Length: 342
Image (tube, rainbow, N blue to C red; front, side, top):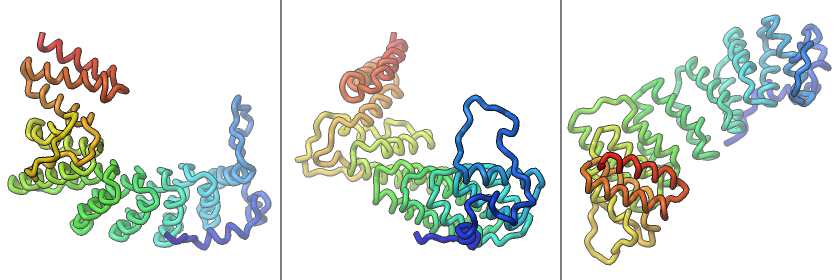
């Protein structure tokens, strides 16, 4: 993504490093962070950062909102993009000056990529979009940002906010295609799986009984096919659970699909392929711990002493062999289950 630098950014490079050395700031009284206090464990800031924030506190005290305040807050943000007060005061100054939002968005294009994992950058962008009310171009920007970091929480969260807040049919229209492309690039991208669940089940779109049944079939087929490509993919197994949980469907509905993934070996020599229940891929690492857990949950939910004992045996295999890092948890599940059958 090309670097977009605002006019104020360029001017910053031409100014003296410290605001204390700039004649145009002589009318501002800088305020030290600690003033008369003597902190036990003071933070040692750089000279540039201490100088900028001292002057920032000075202008906040007087309530000044001007073009030079925008320059000052940009300086602080570039030194510390998580400085919430600088962001908030910058936004208030933009409103007071009636500054063009498109210019600010161009600066945010640069800062969002430079500071992808800083919450305040994305929050500021939200505020700007609430002013412009033009969400469509943002989808392209977000897609470009995800090329830098395909799993960044803040980027995905911003995309979901954009879709939900404006709730425009044109915005929703291409989301399944978009998330399909992201999962094609990386089927283990948990953020992309989460986004698909958000689009399909949490978008607020109304559906009739016919649509509901069709969507469930489509999503079950989709996730099963992806598990059959990469068996040990926790994200896909969680998505399978999510489909059933959100629609209150019994886990036993997918027992035929799950069972082969919970076995130590799978007979791949048969010519018969069940498209509704695709088998594990050749060379898959079996058994799959997620499938063992799923199968155990199926047995437990079905109830009855025999089924609960089968679930306990599966949890024991996880505790002793296939998922030993959670040994204590599986032993807890076994104890609680056996209490019920006694």
